[in-house]
Image (cartoon, rainbow, N blue to C red; front, side, top):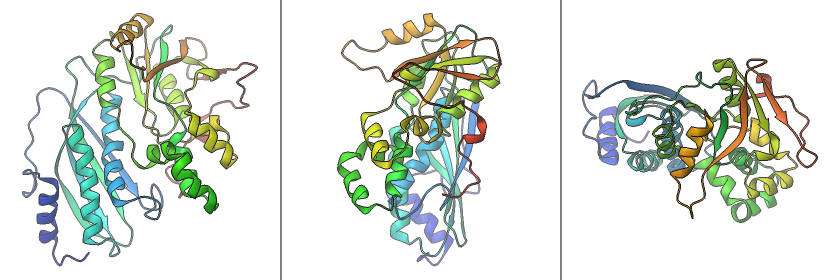
Amino acid sequence: MELSTELGLIEEIKKWTHSDLIGDDCAILTFNGPVLASTDSLVENVHFRLSTTSFFDLGYKSAAVNLSDIAAMSGKPRQILISLVLPDYVKKEHLHEFYLGLNDCCSRYDTIIAGGNLTSSTQFSINITVLGQAHEKGVAQRHTAKSGDLIIASGDFGASACGFHLLNSKDESLKTRAKEEFSYCLKRHNKPEPRLRLSWQMIERSKNLSMMDTSDGLADALLQMSKASSVSFEVDLASIPIHEQTKNAASALDLNPFELAFYGGEDYELLACMSESDWLEIKKSFKEHEDSPLKVIGKVIKNDAGSVKLIQTAQFQWDDCLNMDRIFNHFEKI
């Protein structure tokens, strides 16, 4: 770092974040009701590369992926703590951009940067702990899915993984094309949005909501939720939402879009199970002219607990049986 002292850097961070909670040995926090807590790490060359992401987007994404964990349980984020391991090639101007991105994401979701820790090493890594409040209507967990429930997914899948492959492609002409033709995929990878407001909308209108996010891929979420709830899922392959740019980019990359959707990860969408009556109530909350970000992709059944069956048609076929061996592995370097 260019700054000569840790205290000097902390003073800069206080200015960048406009936080009055930074400065003492601990941040003083006040909560009403249950507290939700989650922590996550992003390590250079494991989760990101500085050659393919800006420091602003990296700061934004570092906050967003943690807020997504709070969204998965319909909570309301309140504070985050940030610990950084800084190599000497991360300069003051880089760190400033990082905190601008971090602050931009946090401010959109009423979240305060409350403190953290700084140290130095040879590799850049980021650890964030997020604290939140449970929603007044309760907490969504992954073990409450019931036979007869509908399986609901938000957004679309595979775009972030497509963005990753485009950014890391050795085909320079494809990387150039990506900025115009596949900008949606690049944005979904570099600057995801946590589904907080949507998760509140869902729990406010549900009597029983089972939910988790899809940070490690749709296959991972389906398998983990079915196992936790001791039920099985039937998923309609034709109903899996995949953006048109993702399909086109997958074709350019010679990749299967279903492979990206199920195993790619980092979409940070929500996977939920709820009764049909709850689903009808949620559908009513969207305006007639408004496109719902939610879609039914299957149903919950009782037999063969902990498995996922893909329902295929003549038009939509994919030779795969979902299993945990193929999901994202945090212990493999990118």
